[in-house]
Length: 260
Image 1 (cartoon, rainbow, N blue to C red):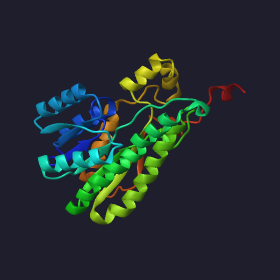
Image 2 (image 1 turned 120 degrees about the vertical axis):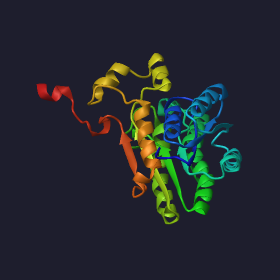
Image 3 (image 1 turned 135 degrees about the horizontal axis):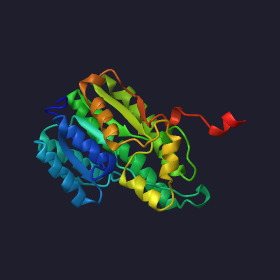
C-alpha cells in the first residue's frame, strides 16, 4: 500500500488509461476523485469499483479547459478529503485531420483540453501542494510529443507542450517538495484505439508489427508507472518524461534493409 492515506485526482478517468490509473492508485491505498467531462455513468462505475477496493471516491464532472470548473473541482477535493497529494492530468481528445483541412475550432478545442487544461489543473492543485509542502503531479503526454505522425498537428503540438510544461513546473516547484513528471505512452490497448481502428484510421496489425515486442502496451502498464511516480520511491525524479511504448521510439529498423 504505497499510497495509503493519500488523495488523488485523476482527470478523464471514466475509461481507458484514466480508469486504469484511478484503479491502480486506489489499489495502492489512495482515495480517488474521478473526473469526467461527460461520461457520468461510466465515471460512477469507476468510483464504485474504487469503493469496492475499500477506498473513498467521488465523481466530479468538469471540463478541464474551463478554469472556474477546475478550481471548483480542486476545492471540492480539499473540502472532501482535506488535501490533494496526487494529480494525474489524463484528459484528452483525438484530433485527426490533414493539416491543410484542420478546422480552427478543432485545433483550439484540442489545445484547450490537452495543454491549457493540464496547466489549469496543475496550477489549481499546485497552489494546494505548495501550501502542504508536498505533492506529485503526473502528466499524461504521448510519444507524439517526441515523434510526429501525419494528420496529428494538434495532438503532437499539445503533447510536446505538455512535456515542456512538465519541466517548467518541476523546476519552479521542486523547492516546495512537489514533483512534476510525465509519461509518454505509445499505442495503448484502449477503446479509443479500437474505435480509430474500426474507422480505418489505424491498422492494429501494422502497429503490432512495428512494435519490437510485437504487441501494444496495456493501460495497466501505464498505470503502474503512474503509481511509481506517485510514490516516495520516485522522490528524486523530477521534470522527466518516461516513455512507455514497447520500444516504438527506439526502433529504427526497416525489413527491406536486409534485402538490399
